[in-house]
Length: 113
Length: 115
Image 1 (cartoon, rainbow over the protein chains, first blue to last red):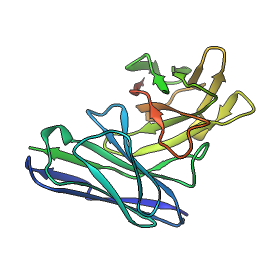
Image 2 (image 1 turned 45 degrees about the horizontal axis):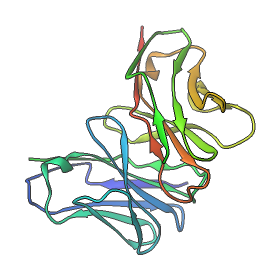
Image 3 (image 1 turned 60 degrees about the horizontal axis):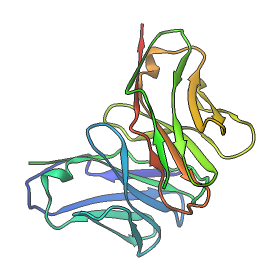
C-alpha cells in the first residue's frame, strides 16, 4: 500500500530564516505531487504541483519554491521566511491527473515569529 | 476558472439525526467532485468522489453525496449522525479538462454533532 510522509511535523522559525519541508511517498512510482497551504484551519490553497522529476508548476507567485529531486520526493523551500508564511502545509500525491483521488500527508505546522 | 462554495461555516446536528453539508461549484466544463474530512491538526482524508454515472455516490463511514448538474451542487449527506463525525469537511472540484493540476477547495464547513 502507498504511504505519504511529511517532516517535520511542527516547525517554529524566525522571520528571515530559510525553510525546507520534505514530503516522500512510498509504494508507488511516478506519482503526481502537490503542495498546499492551509491558513487558520480553513481553505486549502494550491502552491505547486509536479508531474515528474524536475517538473514544477507554480500556482501562486510568492516567497516559496519547490523542487522534485527524486521520483517520490517533493521539497518546499524558502530563502527568507515572512510572517505571512505561517500555516499548515500539506503534501498530496495522486496516481495521475483528472479523476484520480489526491491522498494527503499528515502536514507540517509552520509558525514564523 | 473554477470555484467551490460551502455556504455554511458551521452545521450543528443532534446525534442520530440526518446531516447535510452543502457544496456548490463552478467550472467551465464538466466537473470531477470530491469530499474530504479533516480532524484537528491532521491531513485530509478522502471520503468520496463523483466522476460520472450514478448521481448518488457512496463513500466511507456511511457518507454519500448527490451530484445535481442543474443546480451545480454536490451536497454531502449521512442518514444518522455520530458524535465521531464532528470534524471539518471540504468539498473540492477539478474541471475534466484540467489535466494534472490541483484541486480547488471550498473554505470548509465545521460539522458539530451534539450528543
